[in-house]
Image (cartoon, rainbow, N blue to C red; front, side):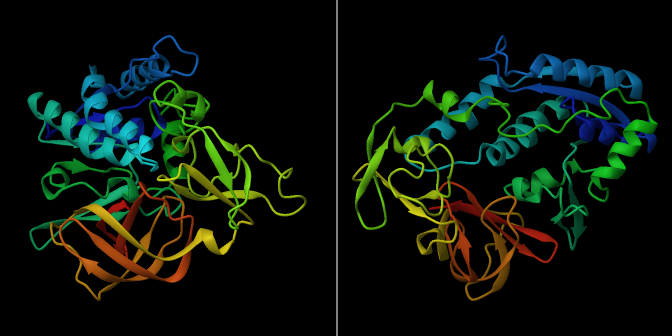
Length: 357
């Protein structure tokens, strides 16, 4: 048998095809299903059981063993606790970024090594290239599916142990490979949203864990036009669910959340998608993580994005060290949100990123 690779199989088509491709290349492949959440096992929104069945069915067709491992305790300590702290502080965290760094490429990697694997693989659309004794994280070839944004906190040690078999593939090609191989999940819909929340209403989920602290909603002139249920339940750029509609401002553009004044417990809203208060030319970010270990130099020009589905924009680094960074953009960026990640690129290479403060 070839090199032993353990593939993280979620029950979706991407990870199943990743395992299939490695098996065809002659690797000794095993699958591992990670259970990262168990508070809602009997909830209508929880898909863990269905996903495990789908992963097992795919593994059977591929001809590999599948093990299920419960990482829910690690997830709650390393990811969910931080998720709640950030929301309570008024920020909007990205738990998928932290989950990759702490669970999928740490707890999972450690477990796979214990199983005798030399490396792990996942169904992420990204690439790892080794150059000059360093591992580079590259965007996936399919720009519409590239997931390097979510992987930007991975270290050299982690990247040295990872394979991304789908990095050079398009989603259409993955569907075709799965269909031709008769994988039972070849047409399964892609999962969306945060893994432990599923398709449930987000505010309903947060209600279980966060305390409501109502306060005023004010417009950009300082006029009170409504009441919010608690700043933790809103995010910058939010349009739906604010609770004021058009009744407080008359006819005109939709209302958007533009700011959260934590000191005064005030939600600031504006009308119009491109209102000046929603556009930012500069930002600061903390808790930086750089793939190569080296922070970008001050004065350097790169491209960056402040959310996953956003196009890159040219920027200049105005301050940089191991853990903090500041930058100015060539064009104003919409709804820059504290708690989200700003991720830097040099062409196709993901340099790393930091948490917007």
